Length: 385
Image (cartoon, rainbow, N blue to C red):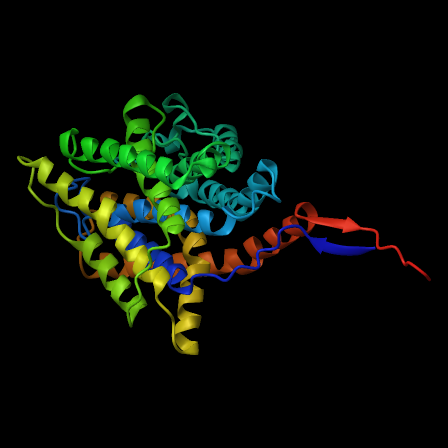
């Protein structure tokens, strides 16, 4: 018996894109740490547009999915595609739910999370099991008070939409011609820009609740960037410049850190800014990153490390943020000094947990699943022997 992999992942990785995903993930953690000191006021947040990293992730995902699978459909069925995506994403979804459950009762706060102390263990465990499947929970099943579709691990909402995008890609959009895909992406951009400029917030914050308003936000955030990434990959219009990783990293930091624009009286101004960032700047960054080259072993190692931990970091850090938020609010901790020091420790702890999950759980589990479900055994006949 010989064992051969079905559709092996033999394509090279875009090292710079891996590194940029890691840079954005670290900025997300920093954004969430700083957010705890604002009292929920989006107008005074430090790293004010840090939430746009999610939209950047969607664009990267669309680009990478198209690059990895567009030319494989002659040899690969839909179920093969779904298996590959599940094996890539689902193990850490489960880990994020487990970590959220383990820390849930340490996050109690009479001010921020009063529902935690009233939630029985059996109900929390039920929510944990549902979270492991990524099935979204209705608001009526909330056990925290933030109306999240995944109350133990809020960021899992974006993975829910990521799965929707993958399904749409496999069912329909992979078959679109470049012209038809361009029309679809333009319509998705209009859908997004209309919400940003004419909507009630002037930003894309939201998408994590299972109600009409938040689903509107979620799909507006998903459809343009993900399928713009697919279109960008198919167009192949990459930009080649020196120092691409440094340039792109600085661009990401700049667009995410810029203060809120326009204030409460001019929400549309911030909507214009975010429209430009998502529709134009993020594709430009990905085009530069995909067209650039990494020179030097150390730079390659840095990009690989950042890329490897990016997804585990994003999907496991938020249970610590829940705890940190409760601690800051209950103890009236101020930004700076002790509060910032603990926030820094939280970031280091999040990166450490992400690395440990990657090495001791995610990679071994994915390797086992790949051998179990993505490998076929063929009987090799010994002709003439």
